[in-house]
Amino acid sequence: MSFQMRFLILVSFLLAFGCGNGGAKKNTPEVKPQVIENIKLAALELSIQGMSCTGCEQTIQSALGSIGGVKHVKANFREGKAYVEYVPGVSDTIRMRESITTSGYVLASLKSIPLDSLRLKQ
Image (cartoon, rainbow, N blue to C red; front, side):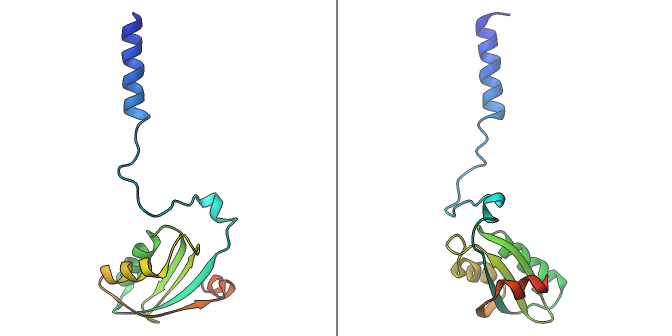
């Protein structure tokens, strides 16, 4: 096999497997899961209007869970609340409000809660 042929195979391989950047970069900083464990976390209790079923819970959990810096979300339609564990400075309440509104719900209020009380709810 000639040098040119080997070179073309190598370049093809690199292009096919080495250049997958996953598309456009998000504006939110990426936090690797193993790094989150070493960062101080915070917890919020969100009062959400409009949830009426478990499907609503799943929608809220998915929407909030897709925000960078959010580690855990638990929604409860009966209470009309969602509980969020997140990394302050990486995730913020503005993005959470936008995510809830975009999903078709209303964020009535939010308050900080002790992280320990959130973990008891999980």
